[in-house]
Length: 160
Image (cartoon, rainbow, N blue to C red; front, side, top):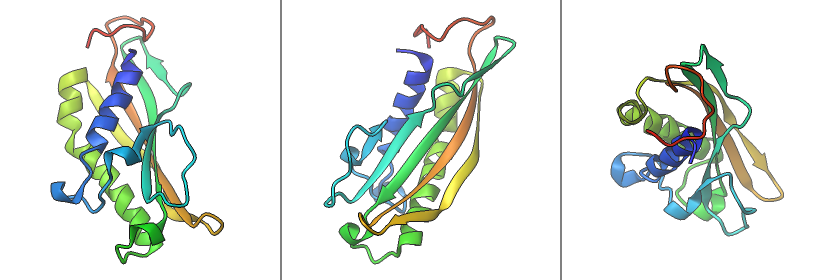
């Protein structure tokens, strides 16, 4: 497993803690969280959280640090959730919860990967509402800069 894959897997693990019992505004079931969503959503689905480690977005600096982009897409069908929230509130709550999850786990990532800087740099807080599917969607993107090595090497080892 590459470092990029490991980071994405850790994001998935931490995203599974986004439930109201942990102080979040959204209750994501484990089955609603995925890495590069592998299926089309059906009309009976409630919500989803999809993590994408954006290939080709990595940059290296002097061989010591790498910056990668993680995009977390969220969405749901409000009528299937039945929590009384409007579409905008549902999406903004999900985006808030994603940012909270990332922020509250910075020390975990620092301890595992060493040098670690994460910045939320772009988001869509205006829900995209598709009338044919009644699906509302949004996303937030993060840039992650982490220490790779003392010299540049391909991301193909698992010594972390």
